[in-house]
Length: 371
Ligand code: OSB
Ligand code: MG
Image (cartoon, rainbow, N blue to C red; front, side, top):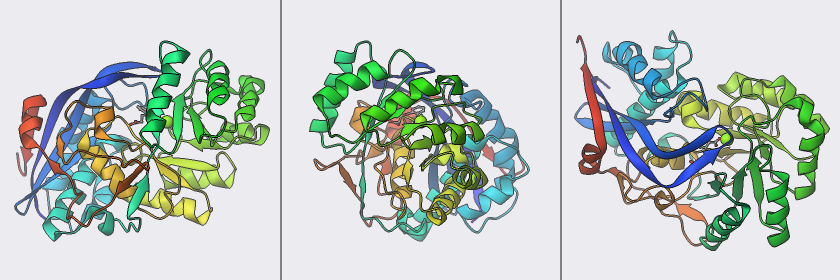
């Protein structure tokens, strides 16, 4: 494949509802989209870097110049045989995984359009439907949270995850379990606790949770192993797992019993697939995380979720939970049984609505070989 050009676009999309985690609240997304032109087709990728450096050190204003000055030139200099080659091409650049992932995934996207194959097949997927859960942010009151859970259960979602932090945890779990004793429930702390709070964290064991996601520091694995020995609830790591070596280490020392895979966090499909395979060797399930993506990233998350070891419902939910109008056609829809059907359409099965992308674009820049 010859990559002729790389285009970056920043689009603004207001969220239907604000989303609050232990690190803050967002009302609207600034999304960095990447497109590549290769042999007459266009491939799309989404950079999941946030509007602030809170979930990770990367944010939209580090991703843009990193792609412009370092990553795009590495792709434009000579031919590639596949999306699989990108990671090696980018290896000299340290970190910046979200920037790398956006570009690598745009190349895979172009590749499947060119080969007229479904993306999920090229990635090695087998599932013809995938199970969906929802991630529900911190609300102003517990009553509003209960109302939201009721709505999502009625829509058929197969797992409810709530965001927690000190002061919004055991008290809300009590209320949820009083109303729904048996639903599949998990919590995500986004690093809101420390190991001094082990006695407090042990109290989560009373609520029959599927998992507690990322309770401790974002850059720490070993202390999660100490915590996992002290609590019964399965720990799932998100922020701490940046590559397949991290996953192998975490599973070897017992730092978690489940892994959340986000293509952006780990630098693209190829590393995500390696983490998937490491988890298979350890017989540990994985699931696909979300980063409030537009339809571009959502389509990629769906394709990844067809790999065999994505055994737990992902944070892969319907477009309409986030956007008044998503930038893909059709929009992502979840069936009444909480599943998304996987078709045989080439590509992701979702077409990018370039008219809407143009409407939402606030800046755009294109790079070509030798420029
Ligand atoms: O930790 O999984 C997370 C959103 C932004 C940043 C981090 C996280 C999340 C979510 C949202 O939980 C998942 C979704 O896209 O619905
Ligand atoms: Mg998380």
